[in-house]
Length: 427
Image 1: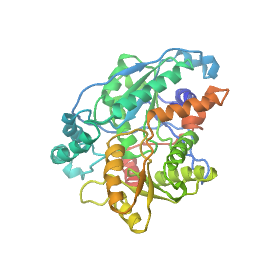
Image 2: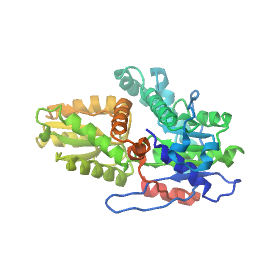
Image 3: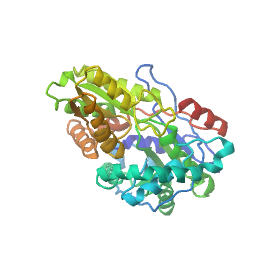
Image 4: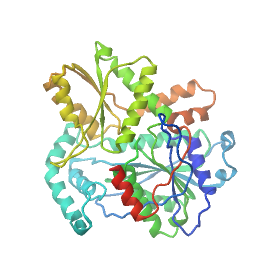
């Protein structure tokens, strides 16, 4: 998965970014490429913020072996570093008994439910109330997909894929998994990083698009830990904050869609239904533009639409809503629908139960007769990896194409005021 040269670039970037070692050493590695508007941004150092108190257990790391660094032509100092790679993900309950505490952790996050400053003391009591009320219905959903979320196993597979990729390139490193709302928690991964005495860290959120409520929330936890710890406060950390615009991701999604369309008796008649999970709207729209652009280049010109799923409660969420759009499409005579989740790179409750059960049933009730959904599992992504390597004499070139492509960066946070301004702009 992970682009070896991108990790090396992130490791090297901090060396060229003249920061005092007494300051928190977080900075963002981003690709601000917009294929409709050209290239933006550049490598800069940044600082996020936040704190939290969670329910649940522990973390682990996957160690990697050394290999020939010279073959990559990395910066000479990289061979002397002890590099870590931290994968960030949402987390999910592994048993039905985990559901209510998992929901508590989710709704206790101020990036998920935002209360006015005057009422922030109610955050945890409110989270407790919501988690207790929602737990029975959520348990039904998890029971329908086998009694728990497969997200940890899939993320473990992704960590092992990165481990193997690094082994083939010779970078001595450890790969860690840190979940936001269930174990292994990000805080536990950070403690393991301290025990391993990592000298440089590359952080890879497993969300294609950047959002305050996903990547931003996890970064806030990292920043808090770095501020409060003497060792971490001097550790150079690079964050790759979004990668939906990477060529290999776009091609992988196009591969999945193109393959799944063939499951319909009349592939050209099927509508491609992109279902997204929230903000940021501009990145979601750009992601879909790039995927459709790739499909059209392959001669796939199916109609497509975008809607937003997973709204909770009576408050207004991003529109159009997935459930409402499905009903409308049925009324308009759409009979074949390919549902494509674009906010995730692994199966979990929102793809396996919400999309492929709840929304599928609603679609069939609304008159849509044929339904399919491509699932971007780790096996499919690894198959795509091996195909590219077979066709490319330079393995490094493959990794560059596969996950990240070119390397750019932009400023993330400077002050609490800018944090709030950025939140208000994006969410």
